[in-house]
Image (cartoon, rainbow, N blue to C red; front, top):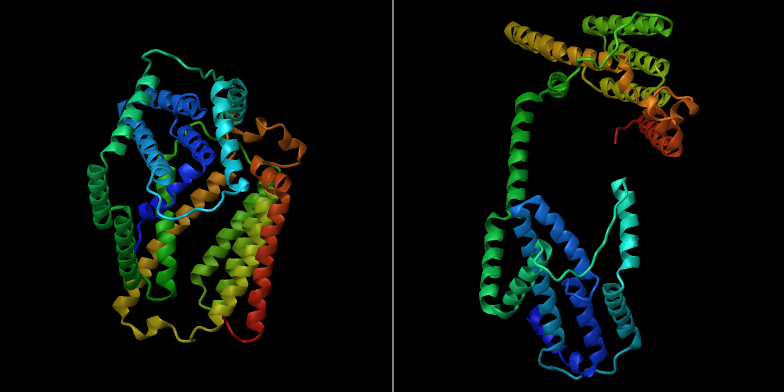
Length: 418
């Protein structure tokens, strides 16, 4: 089977039969290799300057990257246009040569008259950086670091072109090592390891609906606790009294507490599901009162869909209680574990709702810094962005949720779950 070099060598006659294409391709390659008199020289000048300011390691890596670019671009051109002719080649098409010639002309023109292209790059950089950027690329015949790095890259790249056999041996050796201990092998080993850990945790914890819920709630609660412990809150909130709509919010939160107690003591599945829906709808009302109508609307749709899903799932569960077939010790141990899981999850939810409903300090209110927030009749920046600036996108997201609800209802009416 012919290698890539053999296939390129068979086209070697193109260089002698089409000198214009060979010359234009050479200029385009010189532009990629950042040689002088091409605009590519100035992009490497900026690249080398930034790398030198970042430190010695970044400087060495930048020179190595530029040298490799010089070497593989030079090797491509040499194999394509200087190799031995292996077959007859017909007449070249103008559509083949013209784009390459235009590219070469632009590269040389920009390398000689760089000011317009520098202004264009500065304008683009100003937008990305968010502040004015000034570029003044030019040819400097001195020993500044960028020039020395460029010379080093050309010399190293030329050495890689000349020393074909040692470079080929090193490349093959690196490829062989990469196949054994490279990123792909590490990635595959990591995936297999995570899969084994996941299977072990699943077999250990997820035995029924109770343990499945605990496996989600407990890690989530611990992560929230770590987030609160790592986040400084001193001076972030303004303490105050309860007034106005705050009383209605407190009432709704009290309703949530009562419903949570009902859920803890209820033994009928329908009661549990309906009580859970009351919690979701009450929190949606709280979101609406604190100026987040988008969150409230999504919460209502999601809560409605989850209520239907819970009703469908619980209706298909067996009527008997699994703990009835177990010993007293097992039931007591599970109830203690349920208390711990519920306490962790409950405290995490309380901390989350408390942080959401707390009044931020005056200096950290985002709406004070964005003038369009009051004009859009919103209580916070996120709501204005979601419901006003990207309202159509939000409408599509809610439409998708409604379509999912309709699909679930349609499947349930046909008497199947899949």
